[in-house]
Length: 186
Image 1 (cartoon, rainbow, N blue to C red):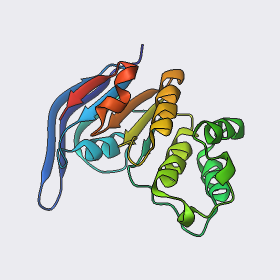
Image 2 (cartoon, rainbow, N blue to C red):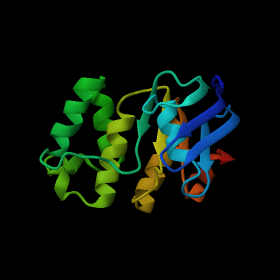
Image 3 (cartoon, helix red, strand yellow):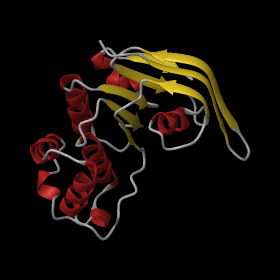
């Protein structure tokens, strides 16, 4: 069983808005954050990963990686170079990376420039890069965005097979329903 993630007195102030949550406890291995745009799903994930400042406390998010909805991929690099460069920086297992490239049908795209990848291929590259880091907690923003049905299935299978915990902000909970996930509405 996973140790719970506890959020208390969370507040993130923006120029024209404030995101606030009194108290949440996430106990399950796979949890979906649901809610309309602007409710704070992405903000909460970024805060849990330590990427934005906030008021309040977040406990239980050690060894986490944030995978954004929209990848910021450098256009002049080839997929292979991008993945290996970031892998060298963050630490990765090359055999695990190869397994992910095959699972997400990117093995034959290694030499393609990132700027020439379709939206779906860019999203796959984004997922592979994040998942290659072997963390105990993956914080994924809109993981199904831009993915075809086959890749959505591959992602579900990876999530099922992996021992890590997943907390995903999504507008498409039906994609993950076969996993028996818990849902939290913000």
